Image (cartoon, rainbow, N blue to C red; front, side, top):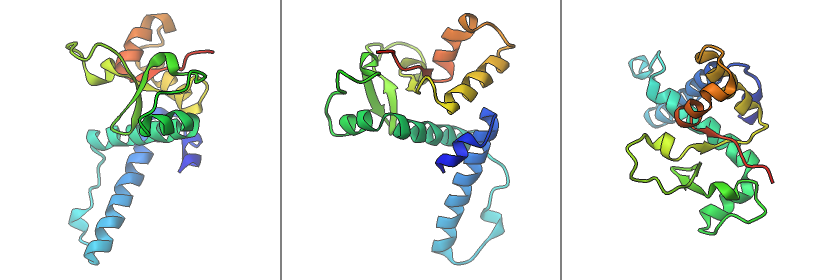
Length: 161
């Protein structure tokens, strides 16, 4: 499924495709158990919940490709190595997603704004996500929508060494 990440030039198309694939995989698991296909059980629309699940899966795939050692260290309960590009972000794993750690756990903001997902700076998926946010916000300059982008979309670029 990694090859699908580079196949689409639109963030929405990528998420919708992944949502359909995840729905199809779920249907395959269900039909293998049932051995009878009931077409009433197959959903013809993609819900917002399925889009969010697809977004999570895309981010997890990108993170596994880009930050394998960091994920391995955190899953084993160790700290990220000091030589890592993302060590300054104090990364944590929440629900399988690598996120920025922090001290604002009691702030009255959304969980995505509190602990944004970490995506690599130079990855294709990051590029199409930035383009999507740029177009959605009326082609504003990057410094205008940067705070919105970090809190709303859950993206934070990795730090330079």
